[in-house]
Amino acid sequence: MNTMLLKTCRITHENPRLTPENHWSDRIPAAAIPARDRQRASAAFTLIELLVVIAIIAILAGLLLPTLSSAFKSADKSKANTEVRGLETAVKQYVNEYSKFPLQTGSGSDTVLTTGNAAILDVLRGLNSTENPRGIVFLEVADNGMDALGNMVDPWGSAYRLAFDTDYDNIVSAGGSVGDVRGRNVIVWSIGQNASDSDVENFITSWSE
Image (cartoon, rainbow, N blue to C red):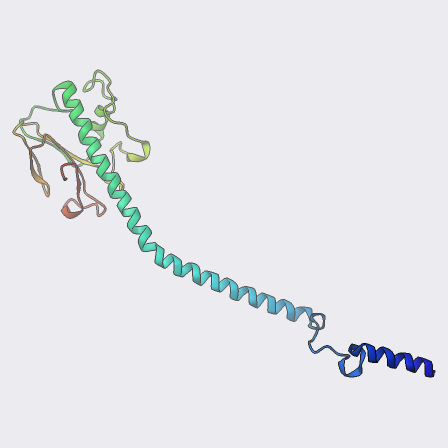
């Protein structure tokens, strides 16, 4: 028995962790925490992380949204500017080919199209054999660039407006907010993002520099 006591004391002396004072860990082992409590703590921590991420995304979105909106508006205006000039060029090419304006009636006054351009579009696309007997394609328009009525529309969904100097006085009299445009025989314009015929400041025109 004395031998066993001696061995026990020696082991205790050589390995202080086995002494009564150090027998219990200073920290509670994870295994000692009930599983339910560990799950609750983990879930709470995950929820906090998620809320932080959402908050960061919301802040970034708030900072980027004005910039993205401005970029989209600029892209739409650029597209409209390209298309009004493309339409003007197509009509001029038609005039050079046939020595007359498309659908010209000979009424003695300028032709103004503000309610739709589908008929002119058919001529320029080579789909009207009467007005374009040679079937020349002066203009190509993607399907998503036209509305259900066959009008070529601007990025905001309004049909492009056209006017021709069919009385040959070197002035296109478009009337309305546009008025007279001198030194041109063809003009094309978009009424802009506000889709208003009176919002001249937002018009995108083929004759502006």
